[in-house]
Each structure stands twice: as C-alpha cells, then as structure tokens.
Image 1 (tube, rainbow, N blue to C red):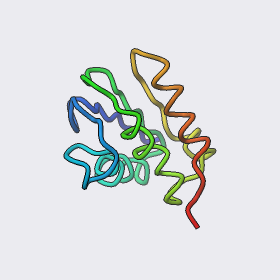
Image 2: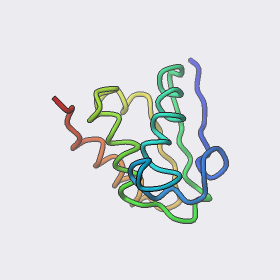
Image 3: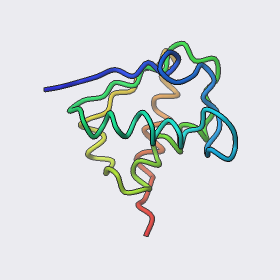
Image 4: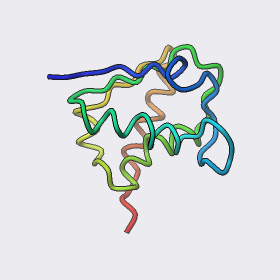
Length: 107
C-alpha cells in the first residue's frame, strides 16, 4: 500500500481560507486541483495534516474536500477509505467530513 502525507502549512500555505481561485490566493479549489486530487489519484491513502495553519476557512474546507465529491472525482465512501484528516482541533476534522458526506455530484 502506498501512502503519503500532505502537510498543508508546509506544502501549500499557512493561510488556507478562500473557496475559488478568483477569490484570492491559496484557495480550496487550487489546493484540491493541484495537490490533493493528484495525491489521491496516485496513492492508496493520503493523510492531510492541517496542523500549523494560522487560519482555516470553512469555504476552503468545503471546496477542497466537499468539492472532490461534488465534482465527481470520488464518492464519500471512497474518500472514507483513502483519506485521513489530522488537525489539533477535532471540530474542524468533523466539519470537513460533514462537507464530504453532504456533497452531491453536480449533474
């Protein structure tokens, strides 16, 4: 089994907060498309470690993680088997899984 860890604060930014690229730098869309999606496609397990970030916007979390389901890349069940989220505040991990679970594929 191949696995990798993405350290968001080190590998992306310490300020992940906006949803879309047009909203500004370090968006959830950018993180999903350029870092998270390629990692999920090439690894059996991906750990996303959010420790060390200075802020964490809900729009970033919804777009980066819920967007994986909404855009049709993965189902919530598939992500449950491949994705591990780590953060010192468990409420953010729970919130992120909530976005994944309620996301629906766009038709």
